[in-house]
Image (tube, rainbow, N blue to C red; front, side, top):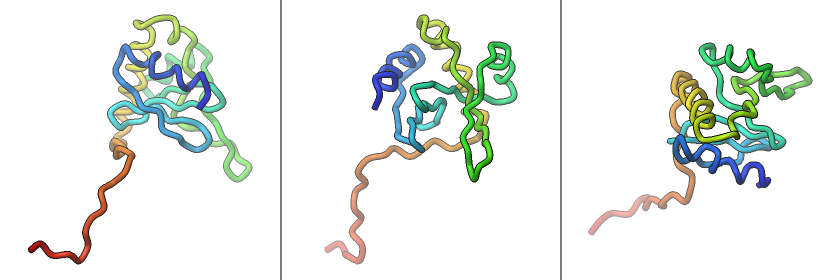
Length: 126
């Protein structure tokens, strides 16, 4: 994990704890099981939707785009503004926008990762 990604929990901390999860060559930033941001090539992208897009567009913040089958595909994430790193109030404001967009997306929270208990199959209790 890059030093940039390692610092993100501290950036998001004023708004609540986040977890980083390895995803498609980058990192997903999750809060309460919902992905509110992603990191790719040491750039933070925040979840965006129709309600929050204007704030990103006004600042000229580009969307996260990758190539699939030779064609560009844009996801609903936008580059985080530099002011997000300037202090807790800014971090809370921008993380809050991303969190609200994640909630509006209707995506179900991801199940926690980790070791799952093995279930005894075919055994009867005595």
